[in-house]
Image (cartoon, rainbow, N blue to C red; front, side, top):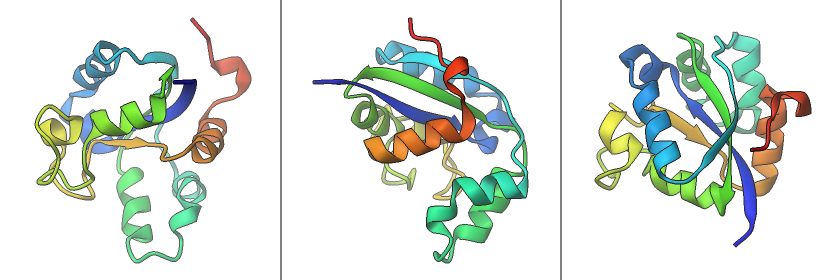
Length: 141
């Protein structure tokens, strides 16, 4: 296995529910290290740029609206095979199909209000991390 970095976002629905701390605990208990984190409230422009890859999809507008409804918590995670491990911990996008013990099974309420985001590939992770964090914001431990 190789050490990877990935972007995780605790989305506005999970922040509003007050479960960000529980999600962070699950991340750390899974052996992933948080290298950077910050609370932000995305503007429409921020969300549109971040999700530009989905611009042609029918859910793009509602996704951008959802991500701007309140603060969220982007983080940089690091660990062996971090992208796959974070995605496994998140669970299926549809919480009804998510496995027991996953974050989405525990905290998501719908496909759209699904509590967390994670990069799906090394190239995506590189873009997404740089979207929210400069090299000076990331602190190896």
